[in-house]
View 1 (cartoon, one colour):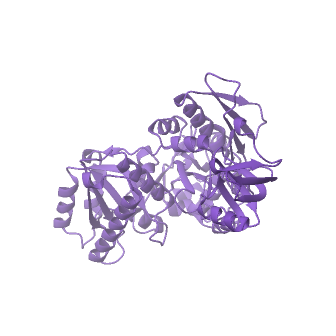
View 2 (spheres, rainbow, N blue to C red):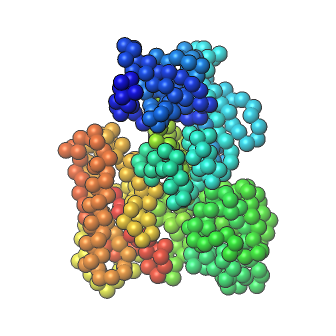
View 3 (tube, helix red, strand yellow):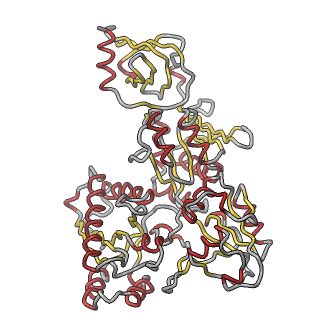
Length: 520
């Protein structure tokens, strides 16, 4: 009977909690003595036990049981622990800066411990009792792939990555009991960055099409003369293929294996060495991140139809710039200690977004863009309007949008899919949270759909309208506690009427397929 009652108890407890402890024998006994659960203790977060039992991995509310056995934790000396593993760009600067800001906000004393070049170790203490340890935070500086491996092996609580999990990693996570890494709560966009081509300031080439960039990276274009420059070979500089940025570069620009990159390529482990190498060589072309650009010169991405895009803060936030590179945190489907949960919640706080910006990355705070700051977009809308976009439709668009401001919150879709991309899924959560906080009470938000120019204009407008309706529905579903009756949430669509990029490439069409949010 005790086993059956234990199974019944397990059916109502929450999913698992925090991470890596050495498995030890324990017995959890209910206060009335009628229920016993035997197994190996996998973790304790100050509130819940996670135990490996004959029934599988169970999570039990500590307030309803007593713990007996050599593996039982000291309840009075509990320390919340977090191990994060992955990209050094996240773990070396950004996470420590955010942890320091969190400690200041919540009146904790933060202490750093010497732990070697590839590990940052911090402890949190009460300000009035600095000898008492409340939290232990470790950031392992590995790479994105190692971060996923540590997460799957239960050696880390969080994977810090510069790319999304690949299908095989998602499958292994499900097999390991970590849940679906694509679900809300499992994947979090911490900050934004962008991939940019860079040259030395003296290089005369100031613009490349994405097709030309792909040609250079694949070896089809080997000399600057083919790009409008001098008669000299191109010395290519890339992030190492086993780094997150190196993988993201090949995924986004080439979508091919690193072995196809030309032999003249120099590979770098970090952004500083890449920037220094490009600066020292007038014939060098590098592909790096906006945050690691250094003193190099960013080369604009241009299209045959006249569009030119650079990775400014707002174009990265809106994803109008096509080569965005979000910084991700991947979490397992288990409960974290309360102190860790508080820290993770702080990462969405406006003050945390300012820390992210000061660290050199792009934050996710929504910005409102006045109509008079978007003259180039409207000029291009008129210049590039197809024969099926008449003056009446352009006038209707201007009439609707002129009294509104565009939010940098924009929604785009994965290539060849109706599924929102990772940055847009994060935008759903961010906008829903803002609605729940009442930040848009008594205001009007219009979800405006746009499309590429492939196919009839009327059909494109209907597709864009359906996408706008789907995004609005996703936001309202996520905003569970919002007082939606206080907000006017409207939808409209203009199809191909305002392209952001040329329609002659896949990336241009993907940039044009979007849902914008306009506010009044």
